[in-house]
Figure 1 (cartoon, rainbow, N blue to C red):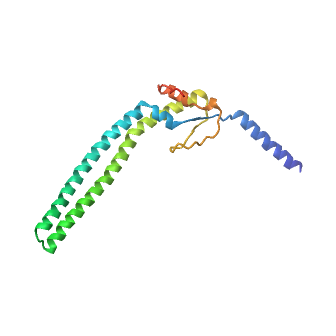
Figure 2 (cartoon, rainbow, N blue to C red):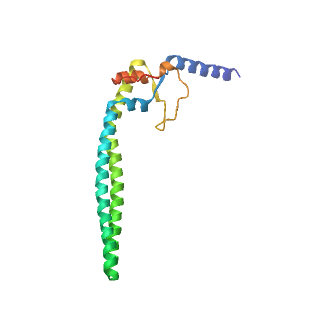
Figure 3 (spheres, rainbow, N blue to C red):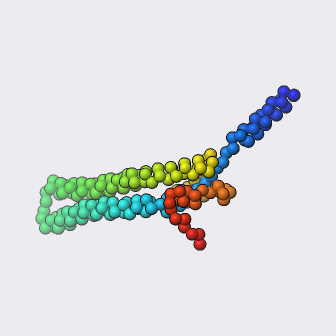
Length: 180
């Protein structure tokens, strides 16, 4: 019995001493908010919009060509009699055009996602470096993101002095938006 009490006392003492000597300081920020106000993010959106427009124009050219080939097929089919083989070949050509368009649309979507990742990487690196610097300067052990990418709050309560969003924005040279 004495051994169990002594052991419990030792465990509690150890936990208490660990808590005193190994202080954990947790901060939080709203990464999405900081990203929105970063000038690099605004440039990213403009670049992506330009790139998407270019891909969209290429897709429209392909779609117009396929549409003209379909109209040509319909017109010629009404005017002349084709053999079964000739009709199948023309229909096969139209189906192949349609498949090319679908493939191009999928590739364009993938290219757009890749371009976004490529452009976002240095922005996220800059943001992470700023977070690391602020955390070290302010003595934080952890910095958590306040919200998910969907905007859902993951930190339901936290002391205001541990919200480093404004400090982070200042570190990045971003004007702090006034709250209305």
